[in-house]
Amino acid sequence: MIGSEVLGKLKDRLEGDVHLREVIKGSTTFLILRIIGMVVAYAFTLLVTRKLGASAWGIFALSFTVLQIASVLSRLGLDGALLRFIAQYKVQGKGKTAFSIYLKSLKVVIPLSISLTVFLYYLSPVIAEKVFNKDYLSEYLQIMSLGILPFTLLFINSESLRSLKKIKEYTFFQSIFPYFLAFICVFILFIISFNLTEKEVVLSFVFAIFITCIFSFLFLIKELKNLSGNFEDVPLKSILSVSLPMFMSSSLFMVMSWTDIIMLGIFRTQEEVGIYNVAVRLSMITSFTLAAINSIAAPKFAELWGKKDLEGLKKVAQQSTKLIFWTSAPVLILYLLFPSFFMGLFGEEFKEGALALVILTVGQFVNAATGSVGIILMMTGKQNTHRNLVFVTVLSNVILNALLIPQYGMYGAALASMIANFFGNICGVFFVKRYYEFYTVSGIVR
Image (cartoon, rainbow, N blue to C red; front, top):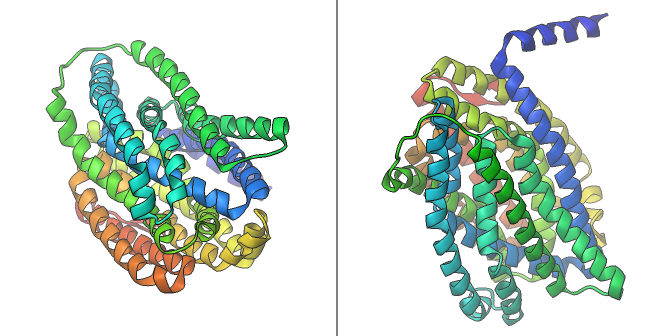
C-alpha cells in the first residue's frame, strides 16, 4: 500500500515536471547502455589479462593513454563546443547553423589529427626510450598512432549526437561498439591460433576504432541533414573562442586522469601499471550514474542557458545531484567491504591493488557526490573559470604524484588522485554557488 502510494506520487511528479522526466529518461537509457558497455569492456579486459597477464595490460594501458592524449590535442576542444553549439542552435530553430559548425570543425581536426599521427609514429622510439625507459613500447605506440584520426572523429561525432539527445547512439558508439569489436577480434585470433600477443591486442583495438568511426559518421550526417531552421554563418574564430578554453580544460582533465598512469610507467613496472589501471577502471563505476546523468544533463543545461531559464537550470541541477548521490553510495560500500574480491576477478596478482581500489573509490565518490559542477560551468559560458580550476587541480595532482609514486607506487598514485579529486570538486561547488547562488554537495542542492 505504502509502495503504491510512493509510486503514485513519483508518477504524478514526473508527469508534472518535463525537465525531471527528460533527465530520468535520458540518463536511464544511458545507464543501461553503459552497463552493457561496461560488461563488454571488462570482458575485453578479462580476456587480455587472463591470457597475457598484468604486464600485457600495462603495455595496452600505456599505449592507449598516449592515444588519448594525442586525441585531446587534435580535437582542440571542438567536441565540447559542438555539444554546446548544436544544442543551443537547435533549440533556437537554427539547425542549418549547427550542421555548418560541425563541417567547419572537421576542417580543423582532420589535418591536425593526420599531423599528430605522423609525429607520434616517427617519434615513438624516442618516447618509448626517453619517457618510459622501455624500448619495446615503440612498436605498440606506432600501431596506436594510426588510431588518432578515427579516435578523434569518433569523439567529435559522438558528442554531436549527444547534443542532439541521441543518447542511445552516443553511448553505443563511444562505449559499446569499439570494445565489442576489439573483443571479437581478439577472441577470433585466440581461437584460430590458440595464442595471443600484445601486438594483436593493440591492432584489434585500433581496427575497432576505425570501424566505429565510420558508422558514427554515417549516422551523424543523416541526423544533421534532417535538421531544419535558419542559417547563421558563425565564423571559425567564434567557434574556437569557445572550444579553446574547453580544449585547455579537457587537456588538463586528461592530464589529471592519466598522470598517475604515465608516472607509474616512468617510475614503476608495466605489471604495476596494469594492476593500477584495472583499479582505476573499477573505481569509475562509483561515478557511473554521474556520467549517465551528465549525458543528458549537459545538452539540457546548454538549452536552458540558451533560453535564459536559470530557474530551470537550477532545478535540473538539484534533481540530478540527488539522483547521482544516492545511486553511487551502494557501489562505494561494496568496494570498501570487498576490494580484494573485485580485483581478484582479473587474476590473483591483481589483488595487490585492493588498497588502491579503496582509495580511488573514495575519490570517485566525492566526484559523484558533488554533482555536475564542471558541466554546469562549461555549458553556461563559464568555460574559462572551469579551465582555471582544472589547471590548479591538475598541477596539485602532478606534484602529489611526483612526491608519492617513487616511494609508495600505485598506492601513492591513488592517494594523489583522491586528494586532487576532492580539491577540484569542492572548488567547483564554490564557483557554482558564487555564479548561480546554489551549490551541490553530499546529495543536497541549495
